[in-house]
Image (cartoon, rainbow, N blue to C red; front, side):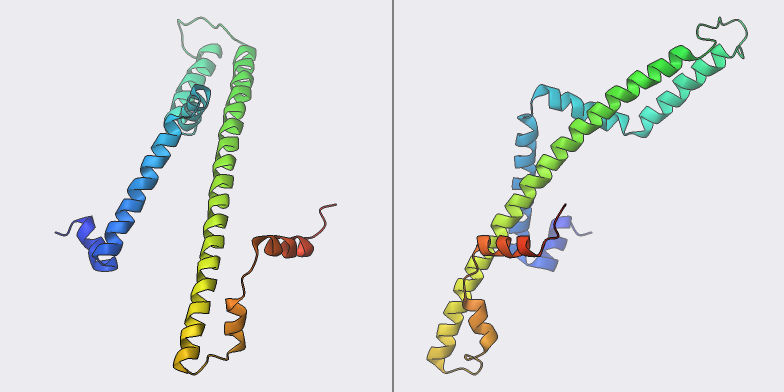
Length: 181
């Protein structure tokens, strides 16, 4: 039986597989360090949101609310009704919904901030890649010129060699974006 690592090596090659494992490990360490630095209130909100989004939470509520209703409808002889109109249950459920929705919003705000951070990182990586590819295209073009290789006069190659400024791209996107009003 092959280990997952040997499968990676067969698919990617040893150097690529090692780099892939190291990148994944580094990202996991960074994520763990980031989560450890979260304020206590966010850690609590995250824990509550995780639990309330689980089937265990659903099952516990089915049991608790089911028993509450059965007892207060008088269906269990020997147990005294303590909320015959179920007003207390409705109030409790409303207060719980208020707090749960707040925890969900806290989680969504945190996830949106993380998504913004990842999008910014993606933008920076893409801009760096664009810059590097432009430099490589210039180098390749110079080599083709020096070696007198065919295709060196390709107009598309000239376009690829031109550096594209990120602000120019943003300005162009803004010009084509529909007016929000």
